[in-house]
Image: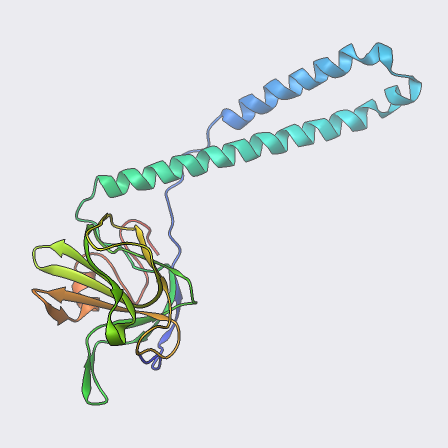
Length: 232
């Protein structure tokens, strides 16, 4: 698909709510620093005068190292909590619709051009960028599909399907159940395409519809790069 008529570059960042800072780092730091001080104290009889003079610098370095470890442990804990929170949000919102990409330029609109119908929108992105299922459903096609190149079609029920075309790699198989936000393919330049991008279509009862307005009704804004789970 053509990559021209690019209104601008939008960068989507998937933000996950961060839980309040826990007291783990402070407690952990206090405990291990105390242990380090005790260890240094018990080793005094084995040190000469020069080591006694260097002890303040040694203790300062130990303190800094222990604090760094505690901070790293807390960051890992926060990341785990965030991932769990995201998974919970998806599980609790079965009607959730999400953006198919997190970093792209909206490059081509739905409508007639060059005497033929462009039945979706084009989202330009670097080769290999992950593509995500916009909504839970069943994969009904994952293969080479003529001008679409390597494509994925997901049946979301109630006559609604989404199509993801020109991919470089398929990550799902026909018959597979997928969740909103699950990786299904990678951006590519296969089929009738001029540069790496995602060609995205939404079909209702097997007829394509203008996807921007349809997705806006489900709190997903392709142009402003926002969705209800990740924000802008």
